[in-house]
Length: 100
Image 1: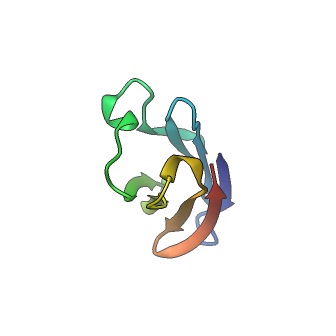
Image 2 (image 1 turned 120 degrees about the vertical axis):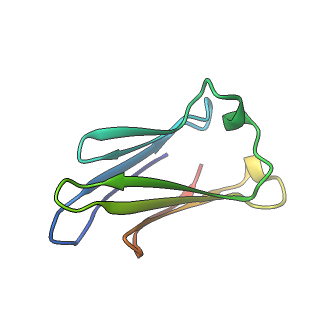
Image 3 (image 1 turned 45 degrees about the vertical axis):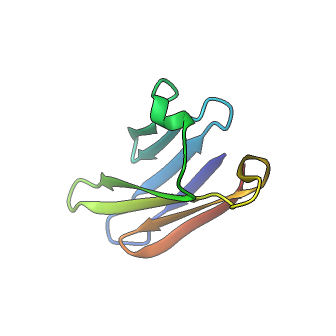
């Protein structure tokens, strides 16, 4: 899974979210700075009892921008069905991905 977007604010921020469904790793790269959200080596990456998890990342040099990534899993057969990943930058929906 890979989500790419660029913000429309006065300070452009290029955001790339990448996830690997096999290892469970999840990263957010904002203007070249890599932020590890979920590591494949962490036990909490492989156990998920919540259906929606939100992750926050700060980015920007002149002004800090809040990047919020939500991961929503379906209730029934969650690992076998598409999942939703909206990316919200400073309160505005920047991108949305539905898939694996």
